Image (cartoon, protein in one colour):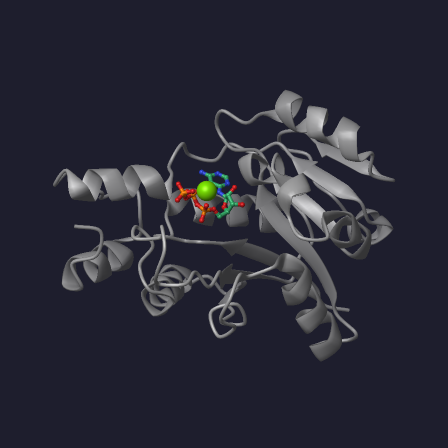
Length: 216
Ligand code: ATP
Ligand code: MG
């Protein structure tokens, strides 16, 4: 049975923090692949900072080149309107009925889980792998978990791993990981200020941003 990680985000742009988070996940949990899923964001109202989804998709493709287990999905990019995770999950589950799906989220995003559409259904339908992000450590996440009270909580301390059997139990898998303190917001700010972004994004992504003069 194939185990897929679903890693959604705006990826505006994708950066080395996203890649390191996904690498930590596949190093420590037995996933066969991670699908990066850039979300659709309408090109109007209040989203001036978000570049069109075709650019975000292309940058994710460039960043994932060379990583055998990293794939890119355009399922949300092709679906106009808000990208709800519950719809994305249903789509994958009906299209690939004998595969398993696990949502991957950073701890900052998970803190807001109760604002997601049908989040209690989503938590029932799918396990979550929550990757800690600098500034959003275990303690903060545990507070949210106390509120949502999942059936099973697995805390994966630094260096610990999870087996396929443990992953099949299902629940919330809280992965303590050393991911770099990089955000897309910081990258956009640096670009607007004319500062370099090398080391924060893959070289190919940096070249793409320059070529299309994104975020200037
Ligand atoms: P922005 O600053 O625009 O919000 P971002 O860097 O937070 O961008 P997103 O596209 O919002 O990137 O994030 C997509 C997913 O990746 C989210 O689940 C987020 O928590 C996670 N993530 C982003 N950066 C990191 C990081 N450095 N470490 C771990 N997880 C991360
Ligand atoms: Mg974010």
